[in-house]
Every structure is written in C-alpha cells, then in structure tokens.
Image (cartoon, rainbow, N blue to C red; front, side):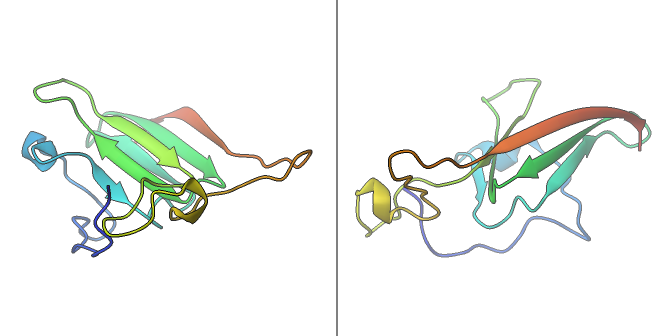
Length: 114
C-alpha cells in the first residue's frame, strides 16, 4: 500500500546522493517521477544511462546491506492507503481491451564516465 501523501523530494539540484539508510523503511517510490530516464554513476567513474518509454513511475530499493541498488521504472503502482484494491482503480493502471496493445520499455547504455 502506498501513502498518497507526497513527501519532500530527496533530490538536490537534480541529483540524489545515495545512502544505505535511505532504504531502511522500504523502497523509495516516485510516482510521476521517472521522467524520461536517469543516469546512475559515481563521480568520475563509470555510468549507466537509463531511458524510459511510457514508464512514468520509479522505485529505488536496496536489500539491507547489499552492494547494489535496484532501479525499477513502472507504469502502475500499488493500491493507495484508504483506496480501492481494484486493479483498475490503482494509480497509473493501464487496462487494455482485448486486441489492444501498449508499449512499455527501458534501455540501459554504458556511455562511459560522467
């Protein structure tokens, strides 16, 4: 269940400096926050450039103590606290009629250093 109350953004000037403690409570979910992509990089080190197509939601999470972060672009989120459990009523849900199509994609590039 997602709390519909929006929290202050942890981004500063478009950057997010990661810390293991950020994920102590759970994943960080950014409804309406994925934009068209992101860059994951260490200063002066290698980078990964993610591009999102029709995936407006973003979740970042980390298993406690893990040496990695999970970057998950989504279309559709979990039910909101106090809201309906009905899949069709969940935020950002896409319900396709029989025979209809939709495209959702992401790519990852290794552009070098930032």
